[in-house]
Image 1 (cartoon, rainbow, N blue to C red):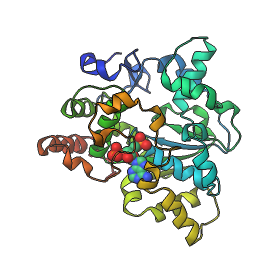
Image 2: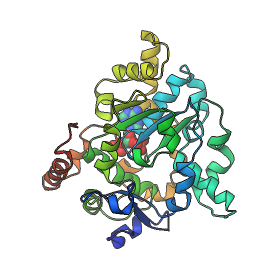
Image 3: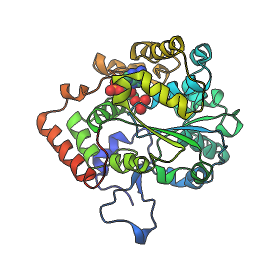
Image 4: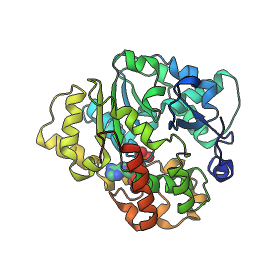
Length: 331
Ligand code: A3P
């Protein structure tokens, strides 16, 4: 069904224009009592079957996440490891081409199949540069924000390697707020956005159902669950874990240090192939404060402390507690 607070969402959805739906993975009679489901753009319903039936290859590699949790960072790490640290190629080709976004490419394929001439800036950008995933050479690198339940069926049956990255909800929410202002044209303030976030009404929410849907599979041999906070604290051990998980040869000290410096925040902020500067409308950016004009914004753990009041932080904690009781997940 449609969402209750359409009014608040109106600005936020302007870039999609079609509004949002809440998707429940269960059939109607089996929806658990407190289930929030997943908020997706309405047009998801049009191509949901295409995603479910997406043809998966045995050697596909997937990075999955809730938005703003370090997806881009993880993608760049995974791609470089998979491509034997070919930094030159990494710098020469923008990330969405090397590592397409499943929902977006499916949407564009769906639209072109329907012969629908719809213009938006990203589509114009992608049209000439993305070889859609079906035409890509193996191994393919695929990004998705879909929760576990909504992944293509074959990703589960074929044991595709899936790397999920999680980040604490307060930093995720603040990052999402800035992203929404910069890229989606959101005009509300942070407090309003936090409200939407805590009500699980921003795109791809419920945050906790999303995270826990992968956490439940963390022991599966084809799943690796990593945390943004661990990457920030000490990147090399995470890199080593990913190398091993991907079945690649162990990196020597020099390789490891080169990779970690390629993946540093400063280096990625200045790297045009990963910093998304090309999707930013510079006029829109100019109307925002300097610190929110970039996709690579702050890259900090607990940066939320500078923006979220103690009262709101307590609400986050209560919300977190109510979702985590009965689970063994902790940040
Ligand atoms: P902030 O907005 O808090 O700075 P995603 O790729 O999932 O959209 O996540 C974006 C967030 O990851 C942004 O957070 C961005 O700055 C941060 N990020 C991207 N690359 C990073 C890096 N190399 N090191 C630390 N943080 C990084």
